[in-house]
Length: 208
Image (cartoon, rainbow, N blue to C red; front, top):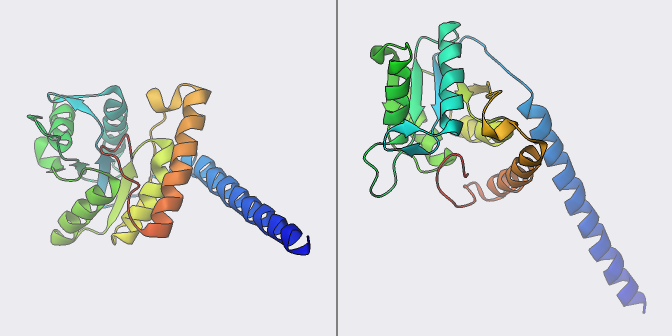
C-alpha cells in the first residue's frame, strides 16, 4: 500500500508540474503577444502565410499591411519577405508578399524576397543566411501575436538580433475563441521547440 500511495503521489506531482509549465508558458505567450517593439533595425522581416496564385490570404495580408506601415514609419530601410511554396504553386509566399508590397507603395528595391522555408524555423534560418551575407544583424519581425514568442526564440537561435512587432488585425485576433485556440497550439509548439530544437511538424507559417 505504501508503494501504491507513493506512486500515486509521484504521478500527481508530475501532472501538477506539467500543468504549471503549461500555464506559465501560455501566460508568457499571452503577455508577449501584447508587446510591440519598433526599434530602428536593419530590416523588417514579415513571415509568410497562405497565398493563392500570388494573392496573399487575409492572414498574410494583415502581416504585410503591418510591415508596410512599419517601413513608412522608418523602422527599417527595407522589408524581407520570406516563405517558399507548395507543390503546384506558381508563386512563393515571399514573391507574393513582395508583389503585394510593391503594389501598395513600397519600392521594389526596398524589398528582399527570400523564397525558401516551409515553416518558421527554416524561414528564420534562410533569413539569417541572407542577412549575414549582407552584414545585417538586427530585425523587427512581423507575425501574428500568438506566434511572436516562438518566432523570437527561433530568430535569436539563428543569430538574428530580433524584436517583435505583431499584427493587431486579421483573423488571428478577431475572436476570443480563436485567440484561445492559437495560444493552446503555440504553448505546445513552443515547448516542443525548446525541448527538441525543431518545429512540431506541419507546413506553412500560419500553421506552425
